[in-house]
Image 1: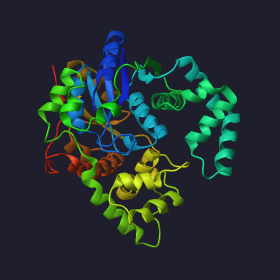
Image 2: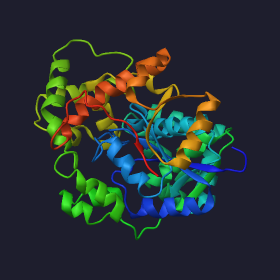
Image 3: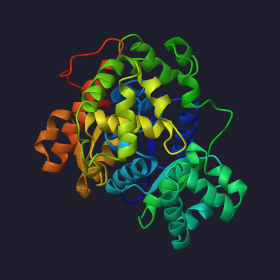
Length: 385
């Protein structure tokens, strides 16, 4: 798009808050268009989003986004590395000029950490450390090595969630013609996790920008807020059935045998997923890793399905400027762009398979709505001015 520069941001908007608004306002001052590549109905930490993807996309569009595309399941609920890989793959396929992301420390420090993490020395050290100590998680080993080689300030930086994703974005961008566009996170603006901790709808809505709050308030009690605990009986029952089988399923995503056995054996002793995650979290496996492993087991997410680039993305919301970006992206023919879900079955085999997996999981996740819609309810992108 000659003379027109657009930036992509990989996001969750769970929910869309003042920090996100600050970021979009800044990007609109720096670029001609803003594309949000937003998580589907499960977020990266392995839990259902507070509202379905179309509702969160509407909040984003009304708050400044020009085009909202989906980062589909399973990439949106994968490890930081695979989450970043999936999002950057879509940004690259549509021809983004830049990728924006939040950073919690000086970008020069994060760049130095990234450069060291690419070195042969680092690769050799971390492989040996993880292999020699089965009780150490990759994040913990990473932090220890950074402390030893680059100092404690660098080690503290790599513990922060936004910085972890920044490093993964830089890895995924390496060799691509997309410029990184870091944005310093404003600590005084409340985080998504802090807002979600309020628990009830009115309290959460009071902490959101007016346009985002208005979208979610309209659906309060029907599609917002979602409650993951509604699926506890289904998850636990499925895991208990799997535990009764003599063999573990093979080829599942990011699921070592010891973690799989721990989850399945503990499933017969608990009554909630929160309790199960608490039992299975240890020095080797974080709570987010355990939640993702539970999704892997219950939904049968395979290594193969995650470790290739997303073959498609779904259009969730757009305005007139977003239409122009979309036309440009489609001409590149680098990825299937699904305007309406019903059209996914007309695409190539890889897209049909990936879309079918995502839809199957979304139909289950939809049961966390306060008043779930039938699974065959038609949903189409929101078109704004």
